[in-house]
Length: 507
Ligand SMILES: Nc1ncnc2c1ncn2[C@@H]1O[C@H](COP(=O)(O)OP(=O)(O)OP(=O)(O)O)[C@@H](O)[C@H]1O
Ligand SMILES: [Mg+2]
Image 1: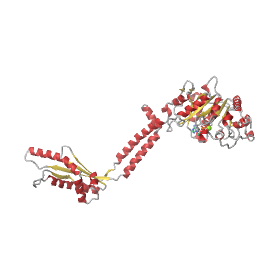
Image 2: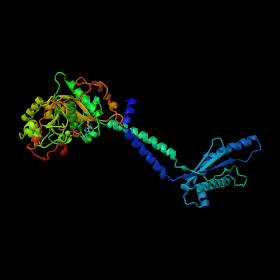
Image 3: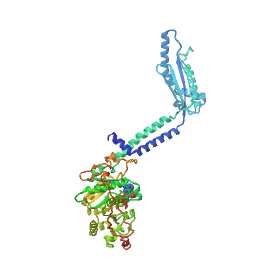
Image 4: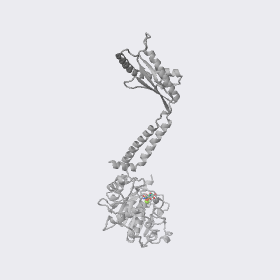
């Protein structure tokens, strides 16, 4: 990965970085707030020796003082002096406690010692610093006075006394916050990189094409509106998702120019990857281009098309297959011109058997004869065999993968399931891709080259056209759908309220 890749990764995973940074900052704020403020009082001591009568004696005295200074700093931080100070001030602490808050340091080549005392009370900090210094002066006098009672060899004076500190030196708020911020950013970036390395979901054209061995024929952006209304009104909608489906429609036509697929199955490896929504809108996009389209709900486990399109769900594909109604009776016209729907019908106890029957093939053949396109929505491939059965009886399959959700091994599994039944894979569709400019992953990072550009898919894939290359004119669509409304009342449900569930739902 180069720098640009890292930048794109950060843009993609900005949330992790932000959350980690804010958390670290919060911890820094809490630590700062919980830390007892400490005040620092300082004194300065001067070490001297009696003046010599000659220059040499004075020089030697100076050297002597400088050597003494180092020992004095140790004594200043020692237990004896701490205890003497505690006794003098009557402090309620141990010598060890006080030692922790006293720091003495000598400047090199000088006879000066700086003493710093930290305490929660500014007044007490000053008192301790001054008393400790005074006690040290006395202590040196005792130590340096010879037994003979002659003048001491060395003398210490308090050159600068402590005053009451005006502000606390602990906690260091700015430093703590800067540390929290820095740590948060570093941790956040680290987590983002790790998360990215562990992410085995499908997010790029290259991965999809590599796993499927087919071209990516469409990318459908995430559009929250679709959750409320799955069907796009192509007559008046020019949103990004509508354009994406128009592009997908164009790509479909280029898949096999001489023998374009007309019976198309949409399926995916797992549930909730956008199969039904995609099937509806592919059908609507084809209908918009003056094609006579029938959308078939081949999902007899958890049919959704009738709900997504506000149709009657009690009669449909399963009703025809069981012989309880004829095909024309069950076809339903929709509010969209050019689109007819064969809903799933009542949920049967044996969907796989029904879908693999000769009757199913016959129904599909009839629909092929009657319509320009037959789009079949199905179940997930890895849950049950229904989708594979329908795929084998179709002209080709659009394999759907959901951006950031479908795992790579799941997609690979789905491809091998299709291969096992000899189904023709037309291409892959990546759904719910984040839209650019909406805090998106901008899956360009993962190799996508942007949906509006002309791109060449793998050899098996079609050429994706620019948006300008197809302007769809509103057209009058022939109305070939048989009005089912009058027949629906007579349709016989096979096993209404059946409790059959998909494999994945039955765990
Ligand atoms: N492009 C999209 N943008 C936003 N939401 C979407 C999009 N496509 C599908 N969805 C939503 O995702 C959910 C699953 O969609 P859908 O029912 O089409 O998936 P599915 O693969 O057919 O699911 P199932 O396996 O249950 O049949 C629905 O709530 C739907 O509204
Ligand atoms: Mg579905």
